[in-house]
Length: 40
Image (cartoon, rainbow, N blue to C red; front, top):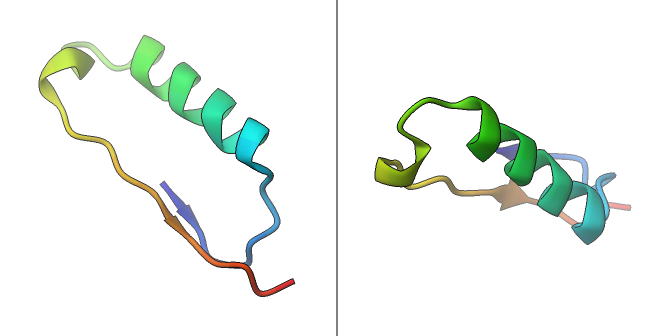
């Protein structure tokens, strides 16, 4: 999950991952990761 500008807050990233995991069949067998910057 990229956030290349650094606009997303930690709470928003958590929510995005929660929705992603809830919506992907077989998500328990997948390693999800994030790539965030703090450019702002």
